[in-house]
Image (cartoon, rainbow, N blue to C red):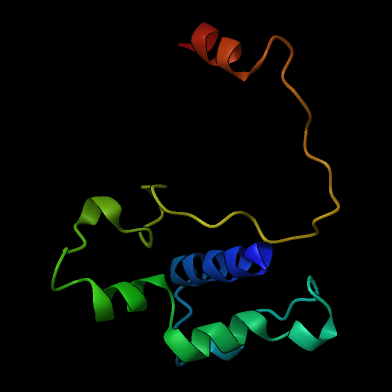
Length: 108
C-alpha cells in the first residue's frame, strides 16, 4: 500500500513539473506498474485533486505562502522533484569506487 501511495504522490510532483493540471489530467501517461486495473491511477489522482501546486494553492497558500525558493516548476531549484518514471526492473549505474561521500569530498 505504501508503494502505491508513494507513486501517486510522486506523480503529483511530476505533473506539476510538466504543467499537467486537473483539467489536462488525460495528458498524463497510463501505467502498468500495479496491473491493468490501475493503469489510470495517476490520471485519476490528478483529475480528483490536481497536481502538487494546485493542492498547495488550494490548502496551504493562505497559511504558508510558496515563495520562489520552493517552487518546482521553473526547473532550476530541485527542492521538490519526482523520481524518474520508468521500468522498476532496471539496474542503476552501481556503486562508486571508494563510495559516494569520498568522491564528493575529493571533488570539493
